[in-house]
Image 1 (tube, rainbow, N blue to C red):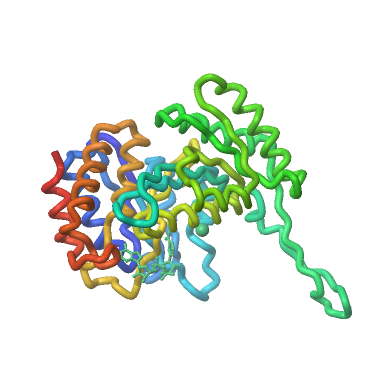
Image 2: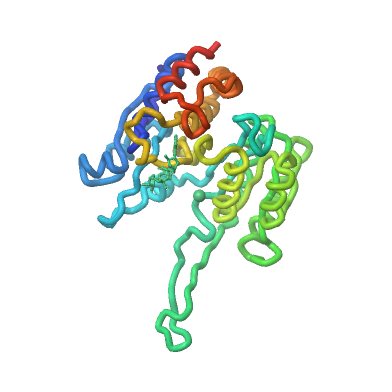
Length: 338
Ligand code: NAI
Ligand code: MG
């Protein structure tokens, strides 16, 4: 086990699904040497800080983390853990693959990836109110910005990802016809970067509202989508909805300093401790992590185990319409590993 990796089991169902995922990774002899650390409610209870310094230091050292879902503490003035992580490590790229896993759903054979810019855009919290109409807060303002450097970097990330993962096309999604400055700059840099990949990866453009419609009418036309923060947030949840919801959706937050892999869903307090949580979203995140460290071989083995368990349909957890426990599904997955 040669790759030091931070493991944050998380809250609610976090420890249950983490245990399942670690068991499957062990079964293929994955190279991760775990450094276990706490965050979220577990950390608030233990040290009154949702993101303790030890945890941050570990990620700084390893540059690699698998993170279970965290319960966001309400009240107490704690800052969002995800936002803190993003800022601390400059995690500029949010990567959300969307693939049909359960056959017989709304759409067969979907296989696309959304790359969302994670630091700029309308999430920059440039917010204010000003008086109007006799109301001291009559007008609400929320601004945003993008930098040329970041537009270039996120589109380059998408094209590099396409090259490494044998994908053929990158679609630049924007609203440059209306949001002329921010989206205009994104599109301009996007076209420049695309030029450098000419002959290797095709480029395409969509205005975000049309893209949203086409994701529903013909999602198969998309391969890699790259877009600014807010559009990426919305489109990636929309895409997850096409293939069975957030319960099967993995994600990664990536920079040159660190990469944090996670399930998109939360800590599911309603089913925590019952042993019935679906570990697949976190397992798919672990598969992304294997690909990130260049172990396509192990990633492929786990991917095919998932496909054969899901396709046979005998062992599914409640959220997938079955009756299996987390442990049943884990055992079935291990048995299908070849
Ligand atoms: P949630 O995703 O935890 O749960 C929504 C519904 O989906 C629940 O009915 C839950 O039982 C079900 N569900 C979620 N994951 C499942 C799984 N793996 N297997 C089976 N069923 C599953 O969203 P909710 O309830 O809005 O949030 C709960 C907590 O999680 C909150 O504190 C929230 O802030 C936090 N959260 C954390 C995230 C993260 O750390 N990345 C992301 C989203 C929410
Ligand atoms: Mg979102």
